[in-house]
Image (cartoon, rainbow, N blue to C red; front, side, top):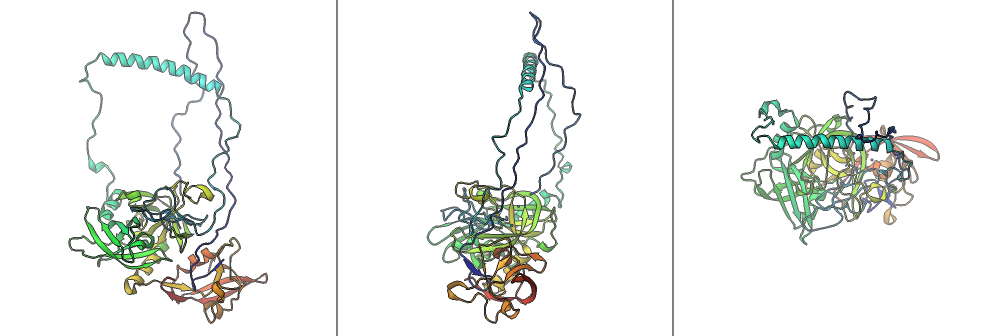
Length: 504
């Protein structure tokens, strides 16, 4: 199946690469055999001698670094959230093996993926691995337990006979200054940001809908969120935004971009509402290892704050809307900050309190290669994906100005199921159309059906979704360099990106 690389319709589904499962070798623990000497007749059993190794301090545990996002390289999701329309829950989505979409407040999965999945990359350790004998260790523990039990009993008897008024507890001083609550701390950033984050409830004309998150974008009261959070209410539905102080306002959709999974809404009557926009950072400056703070309403729990790091950048993520009829693409920021259904549309912030992304997708552990199917786990496993704010800001400006998204394109249709060797231009397009748009950007640069695009500037292209994700980081009119193969030989071409307005 093929779809236009943003010159025609986005595919209804596509297949991601099926990668090999990573090795999962179980670690075994061994216990030393403790010698056992029978006690003398009439004497109680003696406790075993202490071991000849006794560490003076516990070794510190290393911090585990993470990814929605995803799907995903999100989405799902989340990304889009849910297995299907459920009253009172958000629709969610799943994304391919390189990230899974997940959002909304619907437990139990992320809907149908736009592509198939491989095996579960998070396989459990082999249960058939040989086990070591622990008999000696168990015996020593039992003897120690008997001795400790006797000591504990004595202490309990002694304590029971004493006056209860003699307490040995120590009360805290209550010095708030001793806690790290400076404006630059996580607590300080959260306290400042929470009043500008809203919980969004969307309900379609037929009753379907769900919940998600959004944040104040500008002083005019525009709120930035995900398309899949508000899509059900975009045509005649009901939309509300609830602030951290509990005040709820009716809202309306200003514009939404299904391909980018970005939407802008606005309060209908903002009188009395405090509209303090969150500062926008630069996602292009983000580095792996940077601290992150995510704010949202996971499973409807408004005002939830989680922390983590940027665990990867430029992660190709594709996600469906839960119905399998459309797809979204992003070159995502990956984070291990806990993101769950309902976090969709919320801000991902840096250590300075600046928004660097919109939380949109998660990889969810489950059947089908960790894709998070209906029977799979629906919560965070430390792989979340966010739309980079540089891209989201550009999309938001178009939506506020015209109400419609603008997509850059090169004017080709590429295979969406093949992966690993690049994005191959189809021989024929959808519905009998031409795979290379006549007089389009790619045609002008000399590309032909059958060419396999392997790089866009310095980014390696391994599939159709990756190519789309990379193109959509640019704007119409940008010049990019495409590297492609034809007949076994490598070529390069300069391409000036065209544009398409609106979703198809």
